[in-house]
Image (cartoon, rainbow, N blue to C red; front, side):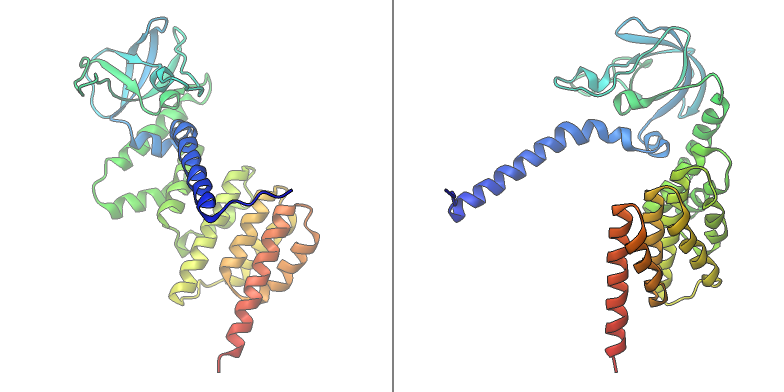
Length: 310
């Protein structure tokens, strides 16, 4: 027996579904959103970033010795952090910050305010984004993390947008992985890719880091789309496309091969359709085969439409 709802009932179901999705977004997306932000983005939300050593983390307010100020201004030798943050909210199941005595970390902070918006005290702070506002420093590699935060904070302190964009583009030329990650994220977010980056992007295709290879391909796709929109050839396109085709068939990571297919699609020329069709038939990953199938179809359809134009 099949039950059919009248149109009014269908509309009610639709509204209920929308309300449920909105509630899920509030419960899951808002607290966890901070966890998906890059270091650059998390730092941007902080009024103060400090390098600290924990004196006493057993109380409600963690007592910390300030070893250095990385962003903002603070002259005190100690500060106190309400480290539970979002974990104090009813129903919160996300990560909780821990402050072991003697440990060192970078804290991304905002002033601690009462219910009326007044500061609890000049030395009282809360973590930005809950537990993600605390960056534990490893025994090895701490200087690289500290340097990255200082560098990113300096970029955020610039006032000229063109200088900011130039500095963000420059980050992918660094050796520090935190800076490289931030650079790729900002380039993709603000569509800062340009032809001058192409040689560097091709070098990243040999990186051992899956994320860097994938990001380089996404930026290359961005550059191709800009070139198509403006009708400006990139130069040396044959070499670039050959490298992308190699990635689609040889890279060990499916996500990277998907990004390579997307870059070839952004290239937008029908001469890559045959190669994409081969990927669609032979790649072991369903995700890659699907992406190649869709890309080949769209490029073929676009070429057919162009051929019919008198």
